Length: 218
Image (cartoon, rainbow, N blue to C red; front, top):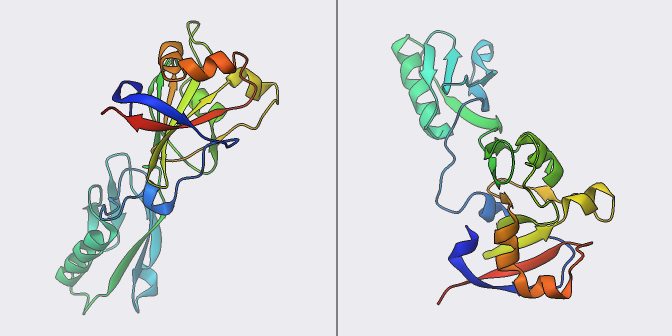
């Protein structure tokens, strides 16, 4: 989602962006793929000494007893379970029954763009807020306008955007909004003003977030 893709915004009567649903975070039909640093619980039925939690390394590989290094990145947990099963069978483990479950992922990311020192994608681990996401990107640049920060989000089948004021959040005028995987944060005065040009005329001093539904160009 980018500001240039939308013609108008439709304001919502709300004090903040709604939370995304489970289907928003992982659209139906898109299986989860294991990635670097994901934590997995691998269970081998009936063989307790092989049941354990492992973490993929930076290249997406895991090490497992008897079979050594396994390439986990890019596989679904079910595909990884089938590979471990096959390789254990090759090591003369009789009828292995393997299940793989994701216990923690750092491949759920937020995109931070615009006038920040290190734009990029950052993992959402635990609870992340707007201020923490900006800090992960090493803060804003000297050219940023901290009273014009956009959060783009898909929630409930709608494309939403919120206009936030970092200075107001830091002064405690309203809560630091929570950030979710797939959110896009843009610190960029021009884009914010272009999207919200009419609303900003009504609210020149932003002491509460402005939330709107993005309308596609016709």
